[in-house]
Image (cartoon, rainbow, N blue to C red; front, side, top):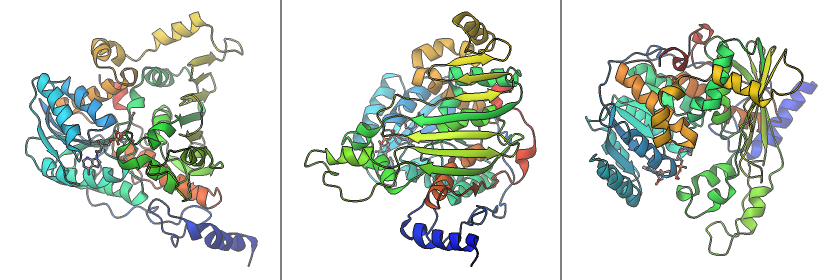
Length: 465
Ligand SMILES: NC(=O)c1ccc[n+]([C@@H]2O[C@H](COP(=O)([O-])OP(=O)(O)OC[C@H]3O[C@@H](n4cnc5c(N)ncnc54)[C@H](O)[C@@H]3O)[C@@H](O)[C@H]2O)c1
């Protein structure tokens, strides 16, 4: 046995033995060159590409929402704000009756009568079958996203899915194939792509302020410990359960989405492979030990798989590098990093700072920074200024997201992000988990576009306002 074979054998016996990976069984071969795993090769196409999909304009988009929790209840208000000119919330569904009742009452105050569905685990199916729904919005725990989205597209509805869109490579292909078969829009609701800072950086990239882009750093660093352990937090502790069962980057999109747009991923470049490593797990275990008796997780004896910090590196086809971090348990301030380096400029977020090649070796001083800020501000933030002030949502990015979804459907325009973005960004979850569990090996990305990533095309948010 040569050393490569020995290493493979060790990895199979030692590391795969105790895994419960997203969509991979312990017997699935993931070769050390990271290519050989189920779903790496594209399955046969069952429809035609939905890149730049145009559908007949819908004057007033009828919206049905599933999952009216912390996130979904905000969505109800934001879609309702576009009534009557652009949209109408016709139905809402949550397994918990009090959630729908509360949102339905708020809708009524705004003159919108929504039909409500609740009580059963699959009440949403009845809602999705309705004829008076054009768009289904999914804001449930992660495991439900794909079954709900696939079912909705098969009922002829467009879908937008909260982040992440999917958890496994098989689920990513299900979204792609169903969107292609049904010719429906399927977009992941990556709100951070609409942030003021992110759109400003994107605008600077496109106007060549950064020169040749070389690398980026992004993150989701947000201490969710209290929320994950609170009995009043996530429904049925769904997020805690994901962190107990899985290691890797479980929530990459908020940092990665904007960076993927800066780097024109799937519009001339693509993610080639990922390498991922996790730290020791300690914070969640220590917090669980302190839970009062009577709490459902008090005395929990199981293993928590998710290391406190996960760091992944992604190499792109053009040779660029993205460093991606995920930490939802350490006592650190919130951070998405939002760093981008080019041959002429460098930006770093938290707080936002910019340095420019011919303006010295430090970040720009306030006056120079402000000049760049106003010169390259994305025009959508001026266009929607008044509505953003009223409707807000994560500083306004949530309203811009909802507005753009509805505006695309009102005008029959392709949505700003498509099912290929949703699947590619989400695939970081299972691929990082495989890399971590196999000793940080490189794992290649599937090509969900089936070769179309090579075609250069403009981002919707940069061409039609
Ligand atoms: N983009 C963002 O900034 C952002 C912020 C927060 C959450 N999220 C995402 O939104 C989603 C929901 O997160 P959350 O924080 O609102 O969680 P949550 O637990 O507060 O809400 C989930 C809701 O889904 C309902 N639900 C569960 N199973 C259901 C079923 N079978 N049918 C109908 N309803 C069902 C629950 O009752 C609950 O009200 C997640 O995907 C999360 O990642 C995104």
